[in-house]
Image 1: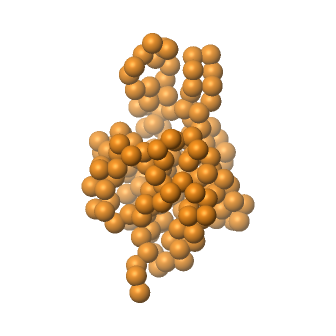
Image 2: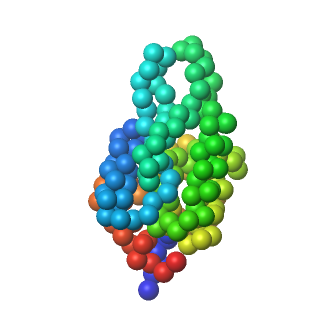
Length: 172
């Protein structure tokens, strides 16, 4: 019998389309009664461009995770303090029973050892399946972090739903 990895990355080269697919899967899982923790990413247009927000998959609460650096800025707009707050809330949520953790991105912060990495680690150690969104530039860091043991999924509803079903059925 082949062991089912309980951690997977949804490869999202474009971001937005993949975010919508994962959000739809998460909504169905929540409606089916699964205890979810984590976030899906949303981009919301405002006067200065786009603001990146994360939506809590359990509560629907939106939290901005970017800061306004002005239209001319080429720097990363991710707000480290906001991300730290999201990470702290997620770690606290993982103290309760959870069926699945959904992480909006494994990105620069996680690649450098921070961001939501501690939440991913805690969930894995607790036997909670983890579904992570991953852009191609961070794949080498992801492979290093997971030791190459994670599944890679296309940003397709059926592939994600099938993986979740297998991961939930696998012994944890």
